Amino acid sequence: MKEYTSKTLDEALDDASKELGIPVEQLVYKVIDEKKGLFVKKATIQVYETEDAVTFAQEYLKTAIGGMGIEITTSATVDEDIIHITIDSERNPVLIGKNGRTLQALNELDRLAVSNKFRHRYRILLDVGGYKEDKYSRIAYIAKRTANDVLKSHVDVKLDPMTPDERRIVHNALNGMDHIKTESYGEGNNRAVTIKYVGGNAPKAPKAESKPAEDKPVEEVKEAESK
Image (tube, rainbow, N blue to C red):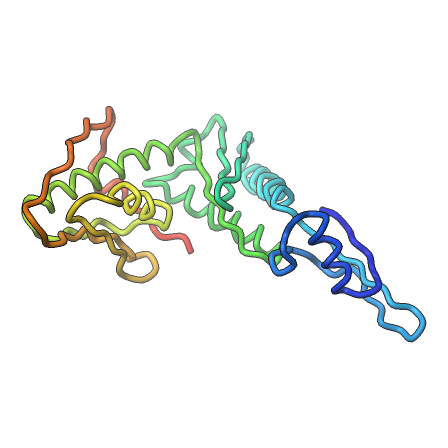
């Protein structure tokens, strides 16, 4: 967080924009003081950077989960404007919950806390002990296996409802596959990906992938969608 003071709010924003290399319209800031008197004109703003949101998000999680009597450690990275936070503790299964529902709730809670603090919408993805990464691998495997079935049958298949990040895994896994198109339908917790066959010459089936070591049934990739 940095403070900038100038004669007007616009000038303070311009100073911050030039120093941080961020367009004015993309600045996340709070007006601390603004005077427009006849003899005194001054505006002071606090400008927040992504690192401030990352730090707050981690501290909030430590406090919230600490209230459950669980001590955690966290690590964070930022990739394509998404804040990825990995949590680890001696009670990871409790933080994950059945089918990842507790993790989903923690993700939404943290996202709302950060957005309210900085008055800016940040995209946050939580993981606990590598749970999400393992799940992404299973989802990608199921998506490709299902796409192979669609290529053979020419019958569209609707997958179980998934969260936005999980649906993105499906779209990315099948992107560029001949004669296959993916589309998301539905609202809220019922939003799901449909794998569709797109007509053309006889399709060439993609090379089959080896099954993950601990593949789980498709029912286990079902989760409520976070906003």
